Image 1 (cartoon, rainbow, N blue to C red):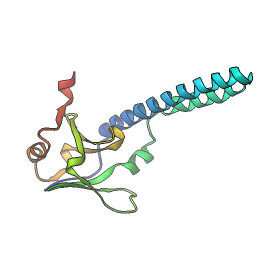
Image 2 (cartoon, helix red, strand yellow; image 1 turned 180 degrees about the vertical axis):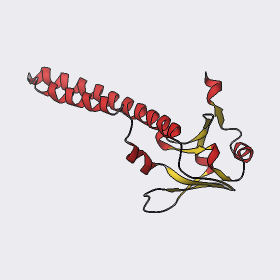
Image 3 (cartoon, rainbow, N blue to C red; image 1 turned 120 degrees about the horizontal axis):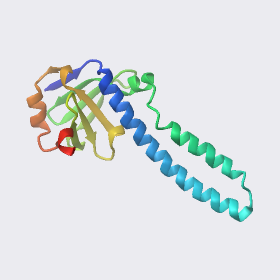
Image 4 (spheres, rainbow, N blue to C red; image 1 turned 60 degrees about the horizontal axis):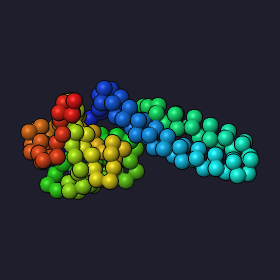
Amino acid sequence: MIEFYGALSNKCKESRAKKIGQKNGSIFLIAAGVVLVIMIVIGSIYNNWYMAIVVVIFCMCSVMAFLKPKSQILKMALPIRIIIDDDKIITTAIGNKSGKKEIALRQVKKVIDNGEWYDIIFKFGDISNSLCCQKDLIVRGTIAEFESVFAHKIICLKDKK
C-alpha cells in the first residue's frame, strides 16, 4: 500500500492551476470561435449586428478562463490523502461531502513525472481529470514501489523536452 498525505506545495499548486487555466481557456476559445461563426451568419442574414456585442462578451469570458483558478477553489478540488492499494486508488478531498472516492487502477492513462510530484492522468480526461501525488508527502510505501505500480505508464517531463 502506498499513501500520500498532506498539503501540496505552492509550486505544485501553481503549476496545476496554470495547466487547468490553459485547458479551460482553450475549450472556451474553441466555443467562442463556434459562436462567432454562428453570430456572423445570423447577423448577415437578419442584418442585426448587435449580436456582435454578445460575441465580444463571450470572447472576454474565454480570456478570463486563462486566469489561474483562485486558491480557494483550487484548495477545494485537491485531495489531501491518496491511497494506492492493490487495484484501486482511494482519495479523500477537503470539502468532499461523500468523503472518499475510489478509482480503479485500470482507469489510469498515464503518470507524468514532474520532478517533485506525479500527475496521475485518468482515461477520458487530461489535467482536469487527474491526481497530484507530491513525492515528499509519501507516508507509506516508497517512490520505488509507486514507480513499479505504474512502470509502463510513467512519462518523465524531462524526456519530452
